[in-house]
Image (cartoon, rainbow, N blue to C red; front, side, top):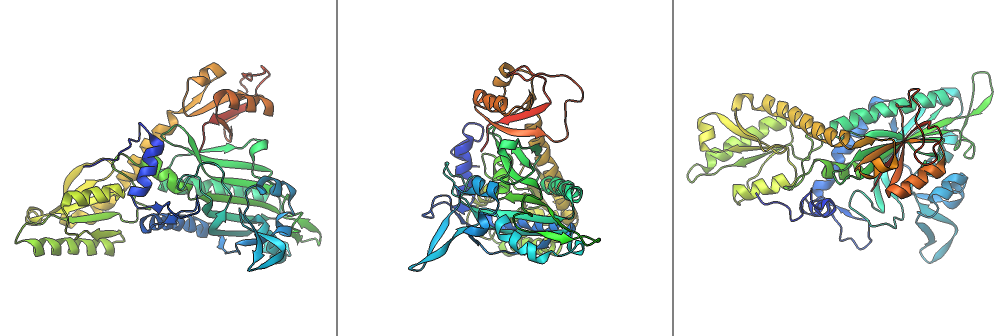
Length: 474
C-alpha cells in the first residue's frame, strides 16, 4: 500500500502536517493563519471526543451552559493577574459597524471573566453549592508562534469546567474528581499522560496552583492537552461570588477549573498514526468498520447483498459501519480507509459467502483472519478491545522509556524526552537549567516526593526538595 511522503520516524513534523491534510481532518487554507476549517471527518472525530467528555461531565453532575463569546473590558480587568497573563493574547473589538464602542470588547481567551459576574448572581446561600458547570466552545488567542493544526492555533475548540465550592477542602475534592475524569477519558483514547504541578512562574494566570496534563509525542516533545486549576478565592473576591453560611455569615466561594482543547486530537494523530495514515481508537473513530465488497463478474449482487446485511447487523449493534460501494479498485479503498484510521476493515467475496465467513483486517497491526458470520458482531467488539489495548500499550512504552530521572545536568544532556532533576525550589535554578537543556519546565510530579532521600540541586548544590521535569514542548 502507498505510504506518506514523509516518514514518522525521520521527520515527525512534516509527517504530521501531511497526515492532517491527506486524512481530510481540516483545511488550512482559510485566509486567517491559525484559524482552520474543520472538514467532515475531523469534525466527526472531534464530536466523538466531545461525547466522551460530556459523558464524564454528566456522570459527575456537571451542568452544561453556554456563555457569550464577547467580554466587556471592565469585567476582563477585574482580576489583575488574569489580565497580565492574557492581555497580550486577546483580540479586541473596538467598533460596531461605523460606531466606536464606548467600552472595548474582547473575544474570550477563556471564560472566567465572562462567567463569574453571572455566578455572583446565581449563588446566594450554601444551598446553591457546589455549582458545577461546563461548556464546549471556541476560544481565541493571538498565537504568535508557528501555527500547527490542532496543536497551536488561534481559534481553539475548547472544553472548560468551572465549579464553585464552600471552602478550600471541597474545592480540593473537586480537583481529585477531575483527576479521575482525566484517567477514565484518556484511557478510552489510549493516551497515557503525566500530571505535573506547574511552577509558580508558569501557572495559570490567577490560579493558586495549576496541574498540567501532558503526553509525550514520538518527536520527543511533550504536548499539554489540558490543565486543572485550584483558584481558592482569587477570582471570587474581585467578582463578588459569595454565599450565606448556615449561621448567617457571608463568605467567598472557592473555585476550580478544568480545561482541555483540540490538542487531544493532535495527540491522537501524532501518537497512534503511522506511515499509512491515522490509527484511531475504536471509541472515537468516526467509522469503526468499513466493509469492502470483493466483486467478481456475475456475482455482484450476491456480494453486495451480503455486505449490506452485515452492515445493518453491525449498526443494529451500535457499531459505526459502512459499505464502500465506490467503483474503484479494492486496493484504492484499502488505501483511503487506512489513511483515515478506520480500526477494522471487513472484506467479503464470493468464496467468503460460500464459507459463511468474513475476512477481518486490523488497522493497527495489519493482521488478517477469517471470522464466521454468526460470530462477527462479538468478534469485532472483542477486536476493538484488543486494538485499544495495543494502542495504549505502545504509547505507554513510548512514555515510560522516555522519562529519565537523573542527578546531574551532564546526564540530562544525553537524554531525549522528559528529564527529571532534583530541584531546590529556587526559580533561578530551574530557569537556568531550562536554558542549558534548551527545554521548558513542566513542573513537579504530583505524587512523588523525595521520600526522605537526600538529593542536591545540580546547579547550586543546595538540598533538593522535589523533582523538576524538563522537556522540549509544542
